[in-house]
Every structure is written in C-alpha cells, then in structure tokens.
Length: 233
Image (tube, rainbow, N blue to C red; front, side):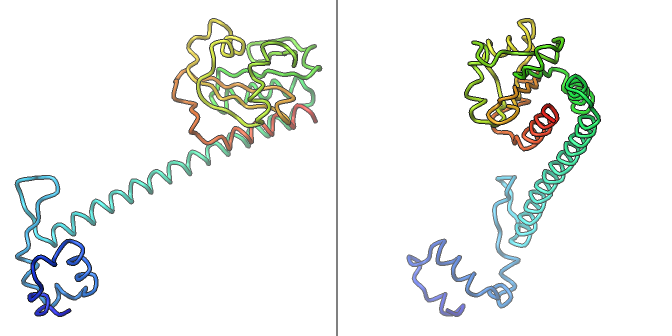
C-alpha cells in the first residue's frame, strides 16, 4: 500500500492495529513524508497539558528505556558483588575449618567464622552427634537427643535436607536461642548431613525480613556441606 493508496482507505477501516501494521511494513514512511514529523504533536508523558513532537517522544522513550537498562545493570552488578563477598567469606570459613584438629576446634572455628566473617552473632549449632554430648554447652553449641520432643519440631526440616528461611515458631525460637531472645525476627535453618542426621545450624537476625522464604539458599547449602564434612572428618 502506497501513501496515496492509504488516503483512499475508508476511515472506518483504520484502527490502531492497521496503522501500526502499515508503519511496520513501510518503515521509510516518515522519510518520504518528512514534513509530517514536525507537525505531529503527542501528549507529554508527564505533563498532561503539554504536547511534544514525535521525535521528542522517541527521545524520551529511549531515555526511559536506557534508565531502565541502567537500573537492571546496577542490580546485576550489586548481586555479583554480593556473591563475590559471600564466596570470600565461605573461603575463609573453609580455611578455618580445615585448620581445626578436633571436634572442639571445629566448633570453635565455625563459631568464630560465623561471628567475624559473616557478622552472624545470633548463631546456634545444634548437634545430634553423640561425641558432642561430652562437650561443654555454650551460647553457640547445643547438644540434643535425636528422639527428644524438641527435635520433633524440626523433623520436616531434617527430612527435606534443605535450608529454610523465615520466621519460626516461638517454641523453636525459645529452644534454639533461649526464651530471652525475643529480638530474633527471622532465622535461617540449615540441616547438617543427610536428612539433618548431624544436627541443625540456626542463624538468627533481628530484622524480620532479613531471612525470608523467597531468598536464595545456595550459599547456605554450601555452608552446611562444609560444616557437615568438617564435623565428621
């Protein structure tokens, strides 16, 4: 369809789709009708009382598209930097764990790394290992009987073998962190060993949104695997 033919088309056959199809089929339309570019006026995207030319609108659309791409790029860069920082922290945790010569030293290395490298001051290592029974319990280390009533509440977590993040029941929070730790708003629970046979690592945060069900648990899985290996080597 040429420009002259388009003038002969009945008005009732024209609609948004037909006009869009025509311009897509004939991208040189405005080259052949250059004066039209200066005459077309479009509503301003932000000022309802103003108009802009088609060229100005195109520039504005491209500018907003560029800003959107810049925001996405910044988000990707931020995620990459955060992942690099986590990888470095896990590397330091690995070095500490491999430098430990006993179960007691392994637990101490894990506690120090979580506190110093990950800034996780509200962490609890709940062990089901019989060898842990002889160790002195602390704010970080707890021993639990696998058949105890308290461990029943973690049964689904252990069976899944996967970390969980979010808020936990009051009974679980009190058992892990003590009844006075009401400031714990969210928790990451990491089962250790196949189906949590070795125990559970709990990392608490004051912010209720810090650990949430929608977050990635890839690094928590790595931490759990490293710790499980160190505890049994």
